[in-house]
Image 1 (spheres, rainbow, N blue to C red):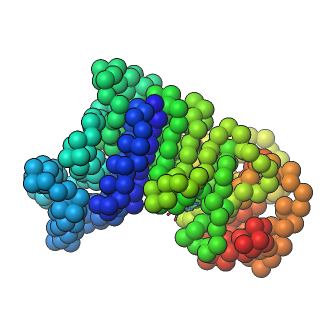
Image 2 (cartoon, rainbow, N blue to C red):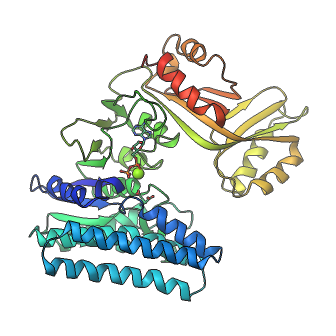
Length: 439
Ligand code: ADP
Ligand code: ASP
Ligand code: MG
């Protein structure tokens, strides 16, 4: 069995959705197809929810109306028979009825999650109507019946496995299953989600749970590129990445993959393929245990970083100091990305500012605390790059005039990270494209 995940742009236009139907019916192999919301929908839902939270009801209502109009046009272009159009209209009215009821109830975090879930529910149900119209046998698997996270927002892989295998065993005669990406239930049984871009994570969790032969991530670009194509003009696809390399790139900003989407596939050794819905014959990128080659493969950038420096003359030589500092971050469940130390100071970076004030306050007990906001981490990723001769020389020659705030080298064999002011990101990515990749 394999998993095929199609992102927002792959289902965002009626003709693309039809292409998805052809791609998944090319062979009769058993598969679970994971769909995102139509492109733009989750952003619209976020905006509706945010407006409601701020009490701006008329703005929220306007967005609901616009979104509904978009879906009405979409189904008319997608479907041809009156029966199918009727069914699709019912689906739309069911979900937009909900998006209007929300104006009558008080806003809460649980309601926010319910609102955000509407996109994937709509896309999968409308796709199912289209498959029915085409006479393509399939089964809609509600993700809310098996996808679960615990109180730490970690997936409950054991329970996902059990539930999915029960569903699949009860439906052995079926070969095509369609399910929602992104959405799940939390430890309270409420509707929740796997964070923005989370459909990739859904796909990889399902692939792990059913020990799939492969996990295909279909998107709008032919594989992982060597640099961010949204920022740099000339980029090229990478044929093969190791799970470690892909995980570093995803974590450090390569938007093509959700940051957490690699570990389940890596743990169960399931090949991940990054493919392009608009160019299905392109080979894309394959992600396997082996890196395939050594040397620098790609750079990525992660925005919204805060650097925190704790300076204390009596600190670093004292054992136990770093533990005390780390405990503060642990207490507030805030992951640290980069860390560098000197004799009198330690600098580290975080991207989650939810508990920043409390963290800073507690750190004051250990020394003088300073922060630099609006920073970006630039990660240079490649198998064994740390052992590659003159990589540091080439790197620093390429970005000669960029003020580098921190450098992390040697933490892993496949990553070198630099912290720079966010205002230098575009320039740095362009300079690295030239200096390191010759593009
Ligand atoms: P989907 O909606 O299919 O999940 P995303 O927008 O989440 O698609 O991810 C695909 C986008 O990721 C591409 O259109 C591209 O602009 C962006 N991207 C950022 N960095 C990279 C990279 N290194 N390689 C490929 N794509 C990248
Ligand atoms: N629809 C969700 C989002 O836009 C999940 C995803 O597309 O992966 O973030
Ligand atoms: Mg995505």
